[in-house]
Length: 180
Length: 192
Image 1 (cartoon, chains in turn red, blue):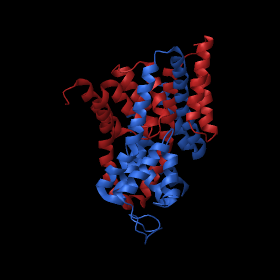
Image 2: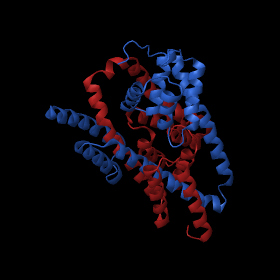
Image 3: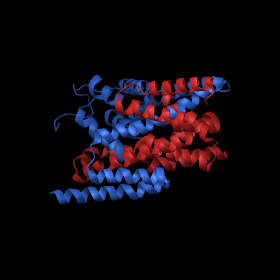
């Protein structure tokens, strides 16, 4: 069952990614993009953007973009391989560290290390958005939608689905009017 | 804090069964649009009272400091704390199964109409909006964090390495994270 080239590639790529990623799926997006589009050619830029929109439209962890990449590459086995590879190695670490939890959380060094992570994660996430926007978008209209959607999330507490819906609607109207 | 409390039980001392774990995490998965972190806090702390705000913050912090998806890590840790290794598996299944089915259904429906020019145009717009969502998430996080100057510098450096220089993710994380931790230690020592 692991004889298939793409499935092994998926498992190795996402297994390795899960072991070094901080900041969760939003921060991982440029690396997922690099793996899927640049290195392996599983997606075009447009397909990647499309799948990201689909993954963001469904409920659940942002992490599911990885499942969707697996699904696109090799159907259900691909989905399982990508998802499990991205979950299992890091989960084993989490499980072990979780058991040592009380010991860690009272240590000063742990709390200092914890306070040092958010800035890195923040930089990764904003970079993620910019990288994927550059891949997904061309033209003034596209950049307008990116800015609108970023503003909806940053300045309001609306459901992010509102931004996706508005983006889709603007795209639809622009397409009908011949702007796209 | 909470020295006498048995943290493998809920705040009212109730054991958290496998069924409740599954249902609780299934709720988080299903209601979590644009990520699970916000709704997870609401369900775990307020609605089901599995743990206090403080306990939740430290478990989530643990999830963030570890590699991998932070919500996935938190799910594994909580599942184990309440019901052992089986609890971890049950909680994670609860979180992932329904959203995965919904995502695949959505993808299948989308693919059936993908050739339609209206759908194609709408997808371009939705893709741009999805990218914007991530930028917005980062900006919101930045506004809420109120970073100290040294940390702001690291956030900007990370951004430049990734978005401008397009350096490989793994290298950026493995170099900048230890540097940022060291800088945090150093700046704290100088404060004292």
